[in-house]
Image 1 (tube, rainbow, N blue to C red):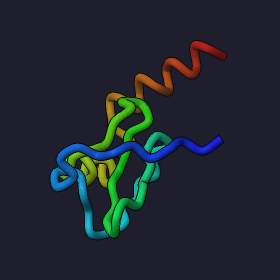
Image 2 (image 1 turned 30 degrees about the horizontal axis):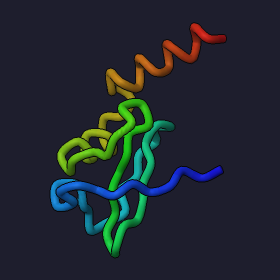
Image 3 (image 1 turned 45 degrees about the vertical axis):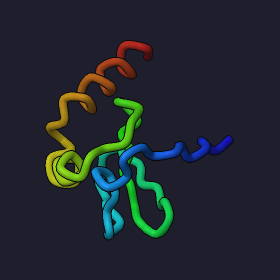
Image 4 (image 1 turned 90 degrees about the vertical axis):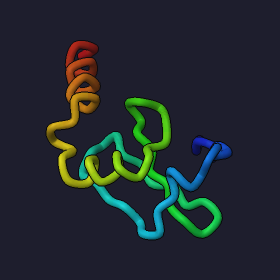
Length: 76
């Protein structure tokens, strides 16, 4: 079952005019009213524009990603 898109408060701090991409498995992109927003599944929230850049470039070093991977390992 697909997750329903949430209403985005203060969309200007989240909206992107390009479709971002990251190799991080916890990074999602949604289209909202003609622009894109990025979402972190680990944090469970939309990412502000400055954070999106970090996810695109430095995803391997992300502390939230490392925590999520460690938790998945521990669960087996």
